[in-house]
Length: 230
Image (tube, rainbow, N blue to C red):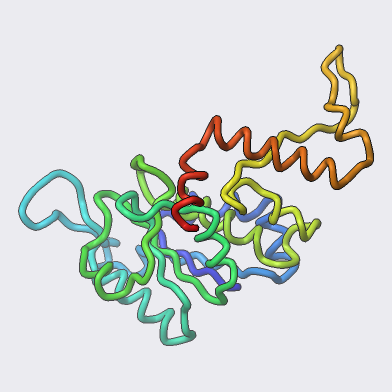
């Protein structure tokens, strides 16, 4: 997979990709990450990429021309499966969306800034809009990192244990069950006996029951969504 990220703050984004799973995914050749500084496509020598919004109002808007130049240059070189715009006024990222994107080959992620981008960018180029929650950040850079992490870890071969991602919360519309490690008894706090029994069918049954219990308590809406799907 190749991911091209268009941003006004590339330095803000680079660190997460230099550590842990995201770093290893690149070292294994599973993903390529390329940053594109929007200011390199500015309309003048002063680095202008934004302007006041028509109709008045506070906040600057990223101009269409620099974004058009950057996107057009990228699209001349290869075909992209999605051009994704990170914005709070969009469908929220979920596990199903991450699963779908992990199967793609080439992605562009455009990060908003200030009051966002000229609507004509969204109309002409953007094929998918993604939010990471009902709140506003200073820019789309951190949201783009969240999206990349959620997607890249699902690419086959990225995680050491191929089944690990399949047992994460939300994969089956359930929250993950509780997990424990050694020691089995710490200051009187004991691991449930079933997990020490070696009876794996019973362990799987217990985990499913616990996942249902936690989901009903914390995120009952997930179970409602599953019922609607059926």
